[in-house]
Amino acid sequence: MSEDQNTKTSMEVDIAFLKSKRGILKAAEMGTLFVAFVCFSVVSAPGFITATVLEFLITLFLLLLYMLKFNKRLTFFFWPLVDVINSVFAALFFIVLSPLALTTYTATGTLVGGIVGLLTVGLLCADGYTLFRKITFNNPRREAPRQDKE
Image (cartoon, helix red, strand yellow):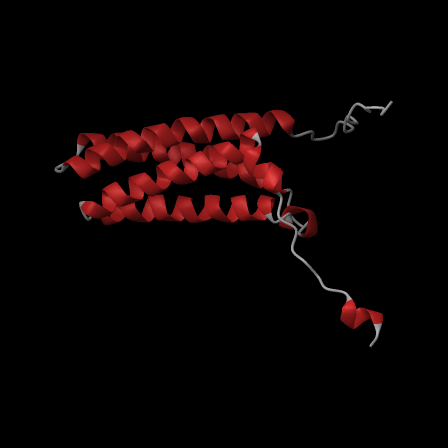
């Protein structure tokens, strides 16, 4: 057998990302979006359901992108900036959507979904801010401090 047939390609999973601040924020965003989706689904509010499912899927895509390290393979986008833009626009969208759900509620599910949507806004703002602080546009990257083993 040739050496090419013996080599297996494996997908590397970055568990450290899930334990980082950004990973925890992404997981919390997905959790709040899922709770809002369930609340809106219970009362059959199609406009609210669509918005929460769409943002849930985008957040899931970005979480999987970072967790499976596809952002290092797919270099045609600057993924941190895509993530910041998503966080900003999603936060603005939910700033409008959540008060709308709170003011026009006819069932408790819409009220709870609006409150959870406001929590999602806070998480999206925190995620966008922490990621934007780490982006260097034209500045040289700082090297990590060396830890000499003695």
